[in-house]
Each structure stands twice: as structure tokens, then as C-alpha cells.
Length: 269
Image (cartoon, rainbow, N blue to C red; front, side, top):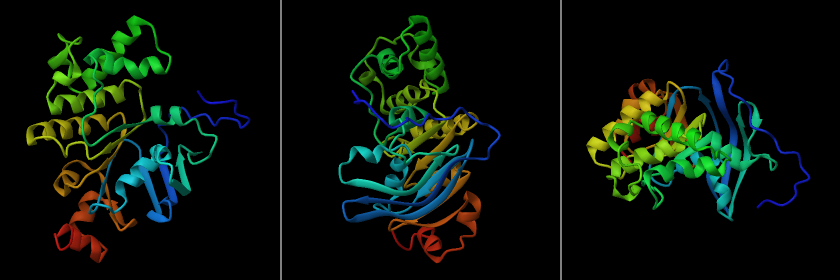
């Protein structure tokens, strides 16, 4: 329970579909103690697009992703400097309601992480946390989110079954459904298919392409072929720096930076 706050909480905004840029990052740096993991990154995220973050392991892309919805706050040594604005709201302000922010910017992790509960309870857990209690409303939201995650037809007759009884790909789609149930505006994916087989990966990629009609997706991936298949825009990170950011086809076919070309061509990892 959060104690009494004297600061005014900054409310997250209602959706404004008239704007092209939903998240604007300027001069963002993220530190773990004295180590600087992200170095003065500036990057606009456009609405209803898929933005891929690529680069070698340890280059700062996952740290950057977690900074967007303040997940790095859970690490005692982490701190962020610079500016992240979500529909104009400064997200690094100490008075931000972080719970509301993470509802607006949902996150799907590398490995499926369903709760050891039923499929139904996995979906309604977050809804209850945010005050939704009416059974009919919960039932509707469960079906809607599972349909959006392309999972309803596979589990509609066994919602009381354990989520752990699902395959890996199904578990990941359940985690996506759990996020969608909260009606986010942005969904952050941290290597969502790296633990999945090719068939499950194809299903998740197809789903993401469908979701961008209604949501903004930001995806960390080590798979450059995946970025080329699904992303509208791609950002290449190296050693904490944003080296290049462009429309995906432009970045892959005509990179302007030597390091980008070398990475794409497999000349370093």
C-alpha cells in the first residue's frame, strides 16, 4: 500500500488518435549503479506501428524497453535520466502513477509466465486488481481478450483448466491475452518468441501484425529476420547507443551507418 502522497499524481491521458507519435524519448540514459546501460537515446514511437529493437546481447535494448513503463524501478541500483513522454505526459516524473502506467503500457516477457492458476483466473487477476469485479463484465473481457490473442477457439471449453497445461506457444498467447484484457495502448514485447518453436513463433508474429491495427507494439528481438517480417520501424542498438533508426526496409537494405551494415551482414555479434 502506498503511503500518503503530498505530490499531485499525474493522470495518464485518454487516447488521442490524432497524433502520430505516442511515445517520445529524448536523451534517455539508464544506469545500474555506475554502469551506463543506455546512453542518451532519442527515439519517437509512432502509433499503431511495430517498432523492433535489435542489436547484440548486452547492447541496452531490453533496458530501454523496460524504461518505458518504469519496470527498471524494481531494480534498486537502476536510475533513468532524460525524458520519456507518453502522449505528452512526462513518465519519469516521480509523481506518476506507475500502476496506471503499466496498465497503459503492458509487457510480455521472453518466457511465458502464466500464473499457476486456471486460464480464466490468469485473465481476471489483473482486472480484479484494477477494480473490475462484476462477473458478467469479467466473463466478457476474458472472451474478448482470448479472441484477440487468437486463443479462444483452443481453450473456450476448458477455461477452468490450469494455464500450465497449455503448450509453450499457447501460454505465451495467454500472457498476451492477459495484457490485452487491461486495454493497454502500448504493448512491450521482450523477445516474445525466443523460447518458442517455429510454428508457435509464426502464430505470435501473425498475431502481432493483427494487433497493430489497435495497439502500438515495441518488440525487442535478436532475430533480424523477425524484425524484417513484422516491424514497420527498426532501431539498432550497440553498446548502449542508438546507432540507427529508420523504416525497417530502409535500415536493412540501405543502412547509413557502418556498424549497422556490419551487424546486419553478420560481421560482428
